[in-house]
Length: 163
Ligand SMILES: [Zn+2]
Image (cartoon, rainbow, N blue to C red):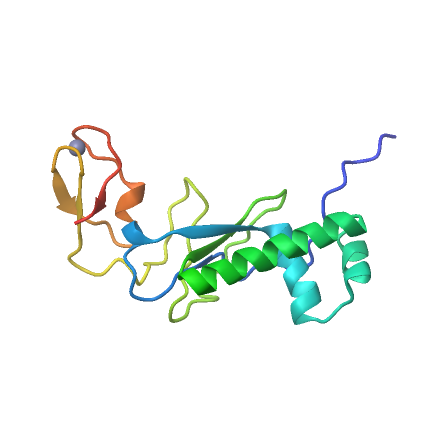
């Protein structure tokens, strides 16, 4: 029997997969994208205090690979904190399980995976917001929980921005 493909082992899925600094409109926000492997590396080493060689074994990756993942994760996190960027966690072969109501808090924002429709209203989409097309000037009310930058102008198809 052929061996099934080995995936990096992830013990816990992130509770929240999007972190956003308070008070910055989505349109002006830059984000860093943390892979699930990077998330797991940080969790094992920095949170649980597991030595790198053991953590690498847990994730079934070689030592150099683990060290590269960890370094990259730390760099991204520090960049996000220093520059006020949003953090998105994604990537890898895994399935996100949506747990309604969990992980909602101030400054944290949950986002459905691309294509999905988030049920949770994001705090950044205040009531009465408007989206505007930068190309033709078309305006329309912002859908709750849906950033304007994810919306296409119905007239010309350009991605919209927050008005
Ligand atoms: Zn337009």
